[in-house]
Image 1 (cartoon, chains in turn yellow, purple):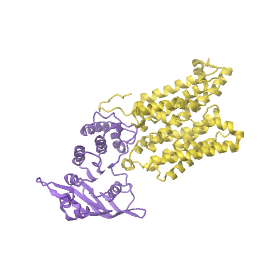
Image 2 (cartoon, chains in turn blue, red):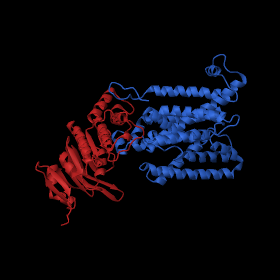
Image 3 (cartoon, chains in turn cyan, green):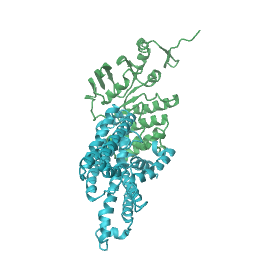
Image 4 (cartoon, chains in turn orange, red):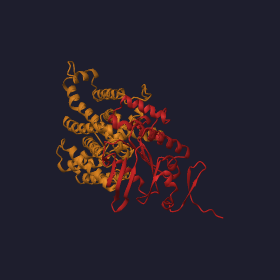
Length: 342
Length: 252
């Protein structure tokens, strides 16, 4: 989409229409998601129920909407927004178009943290699971830093050590799972990524952590463009690059960890969505982050709808859907090369 | 006026710069010349203020380290190519410090459009930076420095990656900065080009300043031979312009 030219002959700063369209898309996809299922609910009644008007859903249908489908769609939206945004931020901070939460070991670390929490307590830990995940994730990122030894100087060596740390964390996680076979099934299904656990408690806690992280990221996003330059250029433009990187990595890791703790490992969202948005808008982090969050949310709500309905009444893990859609998309993108490197 | 006094920089045990004492006048083009590893880039970083040092660098009365009140543009030798960033956005980054990050005043937009025309990049403003050729990228960097309206610009090997045609184009673009009263400090491998454009040359070798003076004097100084280990010949063209070429013994 080429932006309209203004009198100076330059494309405008940011076309707010694109953000508005993404918001509308998310709303539409959300209504679609809560309406479809083994029992279909009418759009009109859903809207009436949500806005508290007369003539809304009643009885079982109302319970279905409020207690099952709505929290699930909201959780999908939160997780999608978190993964897409942190993917975009990791790509900027590590100056690597292929960086995503999974390559840095953050997600695997979060998975390990959550597994330790689940296998050791078995209790419901909605409020604490994100914290365990975050500790696991931030430790994984820190270890990746120290192995690569060069912090931000060489993004590629950091990614490589991130892959190593991620594999190690996954190995430990698998070991823990096998030892605690009583909790094997819940952990296993959680790893494949699923949103069936969604209830208002999970949604509330995830929303708190993810919205904090996203607020921080969108606040600093204006300066994030400076991190795409060399440190000297960033400094000359008034930025303290290392401080900004630390803030951005911590916030992105919090978002990733919360997403992982709420829904397991869901791949490809962090790479596909940012590239898609950049390719369409021709704009980078600074102006695109909110749109990336909204599109990421829509993408995952849609993927979850597929996960629920394609094999109905059985459910597919949502990670299968995102990979099923994401991998071919990604290959097309790679082949075109336009969106990835340019 | 930038006054550098007893500037010393160490990376661990290694001494990168040692007891540098130079003065750089405002509004002039100064070239740092010397072999790889002489400490030129580190010197530029110190002048920028991002590199810790001992000694002092005083720019118009203020110590430069971590002094964000100055407006200094920096053109790196190996720029990072941002993912998915258009040329106009890239050049507009030069206004971030004035407008605040993420904002664009209408004055900035007109300035960026003007500078894009001046540097021959207008028409490419919607292209991604990653699609630019080496010469175009260098011009985009200079365009960004121009819109930054700095008092001082530091350029690290602005011409090293370019063919002769583009070297001249870029150097002429840098002269645009000088016409605006900007102080220019650049490193340059090519001492002939340095002599052609810069008013002052500082010759560095292994972290020390060997020679420091007006271009003409430096070029014809016998110490220049020492700096290049007696491996260069200096000729003077009929126009009076000096040419420095590598010495090579031809076989009989």
